[in-house]
Structure formats: structure tokens, C-alpha cells
Length: 128
Image 1 (tube, one colour):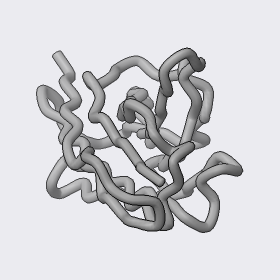
Image 2: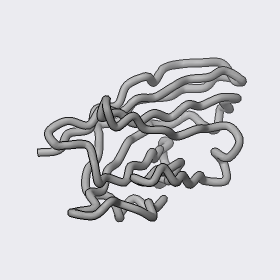
Image 3: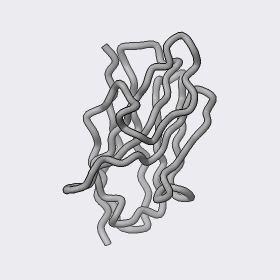
């Protein structure tokens, strides 16, 4: 059973920074594509950033230039470094994983239905 556990959320003022972490357990952390998603109250969940096994990253337009996704396979951990935070970044942030099977996972998607496993989320609140 693959489990994802996010941490690092909190309350910050606009312009501040946070780093989210997501630890993957219950499986060997390879051949996975990983993604960060967020959902604000009353809105649909949206993709924020992804990273595949080749360390190829993709970002939503809203995240480009401000957020950085990375992974440490030795620690089974995914990160999202968020800077220059804005009130509109306020949301519950989720990490997600898709197993690539016997091959290295590539071409991670920003579409949430592509992923197999989800964490419980960590709240990020940005005040103006």
C-alpha cells in the first residue's frame, strides 16, 4: 500500500515562502512520476507542478518562476519550494504519484486523473 504524507504547510504573508514535503512510504520510490496539486475552497483541484523519473519538470502558468519542484529518491521525498507567495495561492496542497510500472515513469501530467495515489493534503494560507 503506497502512502503519501505531506507536510510544511502554514500561514504566511504575501511575498513569503514555504517549502512543502511529501514522503512516500509503502513502496520503493522509483519508477514514479510525482505531482503537486492544489484546491481552493469552491474551486476545482488544479495541477501545480510535476516531476518525472528523468527529473523533467512541468509547471502551471501560475507557478512558473515562483515554485520549484524537486525530488530526493534516496529519501523517498518530493518537495515544492514556493516563493513570492500570493493570496491566490491559498489552498489545500496535495501530492500525487503514478507508478510507471517496470519502466521509468516519464511525461508526468498536470491532470489529476492521471495519478494513482494521493496524500491527505497540507493547508497553505497566504494573507495580504
